[in-house]
Image 1 (tube, rainbow, N blue to C red):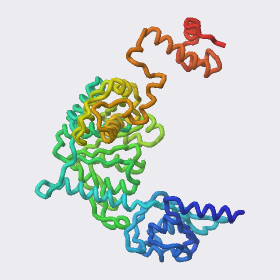
Image 2: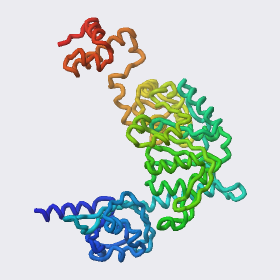
Image 3: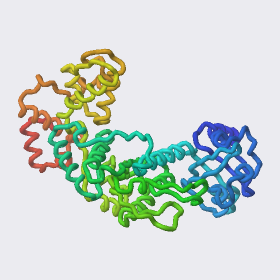
Image 4: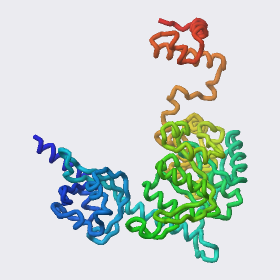
Amino acid sequence: MENKYYESVIEILDYIDEGIQVIDEHGKIVYYNKAARVVDGIEGQTAIGRHFLEIYPSLSNETSTLIKSMETMKAIYNEQQDFINYKGDKITTMNSSFPIKHNNRIIGAIEVSKNITQMKEMSEKIADLQSELYKPRKEKRNIRHSEKYTLVDIIGQSKEMLKLKNLAFKASQSDSPVLIGGKTGTGKELFVQAIHYASRRKKKPFIAQNCAALPANLLESMLFGSVRGSFTGAENRPGLFEMADGGTLFLDEINSMPLELQAKLLRAIQNNNIRRVGATSTIDVNVRIIAAFNEDIEDILNSGKMRKDLFYRLNVITLIVPELKDRSSDIPLLVEYFIDKYNKEMNKYITGLSDEVMEIFMHYDWPGNVRELEHAIEGIASIYDIDLIREEHLPYQFRHIKDSEDYIRIEEIGSLKKTLEDTEKKMIELALKKTDNNITRSAEILDVPRQTLQYRIKKLKIINT
């Protein structure tokens, strides 16, 4: 029975994306799953029974995370490893390695690795292109500039957006760090770019990096650069801080940055210099940092996802971009803008929304915010040749809005007093139901004095069974 379970587990391991390898105490490979064989260019069970360094000639006892974990008897978590496989391909993996013990004796080690070769190559290509883009003008060739957004490009006339634009403009007139909060899709990067292009740094580089897009090791070398030989496969490369010198570096989703890297970022901001990975000397930089987060800041700090000293250093100017549902008066403007945009791009002739669709849009919660609205218009324009967007053209998530309890048509609006009383009555009934008709606990939930609740129950003729 045990062999049957063992064989089932071994078979399952061949279907996961991460590479798994196991070596014995002599360094010989005893298990090698399919993902590992693919990455390393090994066919079948060729590697079984052979020494690990025979299969990986570019590694050594010192550079192999698997052997190092076994020899030091310590676990290694998420360490980047570069090597050349049997076919001569340069591979980069992110490894976690663990010693295997039996009766207090090391009998081998196991490693779980994720192939990040393409991710690393892409990040290096982006870094090279950015470096080329921001060379002195006389060295530039035919490089296209990315689209630039200014405050004028940000659509919105609601009081929330007008106030935010004003604050953003004021922020652009200083060099202080800026923290921008807001849910995904609210348009945080638009404000970041608008601040940069309204500032005295507008003719200098604007560089953006998503902190959640790369593993810690890659992100560190991406930000601070590296020197040849600092780790296997490392080359002399400038980091984003150097490329953004004189300009602005935008760090998106900074709450996803590993804590140890946050400490290095804090030092760079405080000292105005950076040290490349593996270097012994520092490089002075003049960079304005704008950082964005997409969670509630109190939750981020309380959960320990962000160092408080880094937060306080960045939190000189704070802007919070509101959700679309909190500035619904801007929806007609945004609809008009996106219809015009996709009419031009797709050669369509959409004139607008039907009254029913506009009403649905005004009641929808928009969890994806402005980005979701844009994608909805884009999708409709892609599929339909129409002049007016009607209910039947809407994506699935909009189909049941009219059936929801909080959907109120304009013509259904009646007495405000009665509406408030009905809502209050419903809330009290729900609180009583939740507390099994306990007046004291219900009053605590509703945040009202017990006597007030008793009065309202009597006044609204609520049956308290």
